[in-house]
Image (cartoon, rainbow, N blue to C red; front, side, top):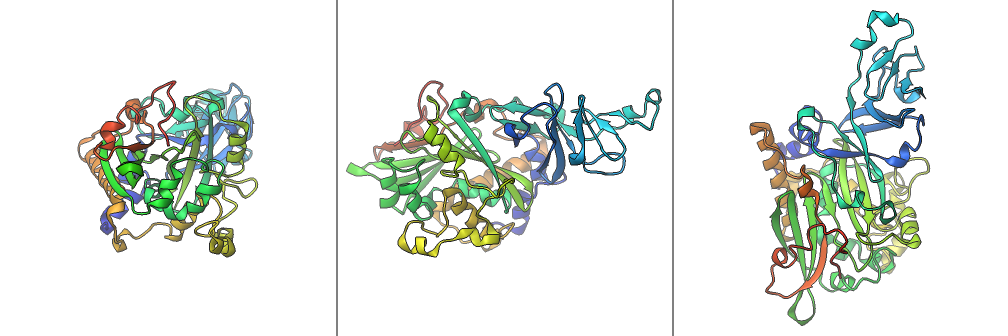
Length: 428
């Protein structure tokens, strides 16, 4: 279990909190590129790390992310007119460029220099892959652009979605590195979900519900190995990379696309669950892409016009007790994404970790908490750069493999756990 003080340290991400300052050292996914599809399209509200922001794309295609509220009277710029290289407040006509700099106040003479004194807080917004990324930290610490494989393969090989999850980021992320629950919570979906079924490794998940966990340090975080029994005295390994602070990657199944997540704080009681699928060496098939759009795999269905899941706590996640009784879904909730989210949200907005009773299969979670605590304390005390920021730390893959019993996974899969352009994922 954690003390109250450590739980607060790891879960609070405002600008004045240590973990909030650490999150601001990384590039964070802010929007899908499709949310700002055209020059001068409507602006979009964004809330990240407790800050209410507005995103827009100007007449020259430049992306801007800045304080949501006009510096004059505090009107939300979501109502603004996106026109002629700037966003104009509809109340009194104050206009801002993509950096947040005020460039026109109609009531003031241009020669007065008044505009030069007015600037909203702004952050860079950069397109890499199908995601718009932002960096919310100090300029002197700005790292290289994201180097994750999923957002650097050709567009036909990747698909990304996001959903609003009504829980703190940490309990969502901890679900992403907990491989032991797959044998229970997702057991029905392994047989029916088109992005999971048919993989040879599924039988090991179902036959051995008592995995043994081994966790090793990685430059950017951890490699979390879950070992299950296989034939001839061998072991089936599912190896999950966790890269600080919130990147997780699901071990692959056969030749299905590889899944993964970012868990990005909206505020301390909500987070964005970003989910991606990609294949390192081939285009996604039309069937695979449509399955993702339809909410299969790690994706979900939506309340129309929003990023809130169609299944949510207001409708009890559309739980089907009959399907649960028949074994079609272990929890009665449809879809892998919402099977996870429903249980994580059930813990409350911020789970009280002082009441936990952890076991050996929680070793990855225990070590991840320790790495987070150690990194944030070192950053605050000595200014140390947190792990996971440099591109080399982001060049990781997940692995599913059957190995001889005497082969440590970290040694046997050393090359497989790194990105190798032109080489497909190692999978069973």
